[in-house]
Length: 401
Image (tube, rainbow, N blue to C red; front, top):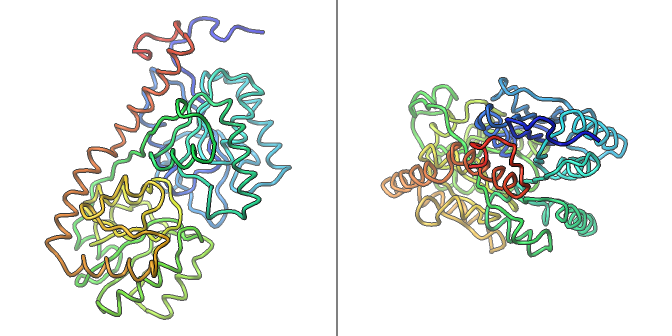
């Protein structure tokens, strides 16, 4: 067997695996790392499957510059034949590339990627939980299988990355991994320069007058588009000139289509857009209605744009939105969640000074805590810590320091 470092490598080789690069937080984070980690210190390769026909391709919309290696069979759906093919492909690629670290993102890639890394005898394995599947996604029996699988994989994972402290605590409470293996690395991103509010509303064909509430994200069951529609219905009843813009797509888009038939121009589906900064620039508030989240990048982007949020307090949402400071939160298991969300929206829309103050605080907090440079720095230190533990003394000194 060839030695791992035959000539003393100048760079750490990192193989990054994600099931698919659909529009969402994981793809955004992966892109930031592929662009941000220094190529003279890190040799990175991104391996991914294809997005489904009903999903938007983040690479095409926002990151055509990021090179990828396609993995046949890797994607959203669980199909034994495709999964076996993807696993074999990953093992072959790992043996060819010989990474020091395999870093997996999303649940399916986390399973196949870490099993492949064990078969290919990759020295170090890292997995990022961008959220978790502990509730709201599957029936109880399937959830138990998912938890059991994650427990087994965690035993052979050098670092378990969670996007927030609440996500980490939920995973530990489920018995997944040991506390010393966890590292909290919040998402990080930057927004491109935004147009003025008037320019943004003109670009999106929105009224120049009247408040605009933005929803940005996938339109799937766990995100509760039915709750979004209920909130819109209640808000429009109180503020008739309010407009809800929905930037996203998914298998529950029919809920939004039905709302358009009912509410007319008060709710505007935009589909996926590569210029989300335009959506936030047009908005007075951002709304999140989910039953389960990791740390929503849409709320981070909203903060960077100086737009306060009204959201359900799920996952690590409270680590992004300070209740009463940068937005208002509602417990997801309380009575009449839609009514409470709508009440908060109406309250802030009617209090211009408070809303602007929240927006300023949101921008300051997001810029300090959630910039792309901070994500890259945290991940660089994570890889350095593994190099130190492994005694990779031949790796360049400036990587280890």
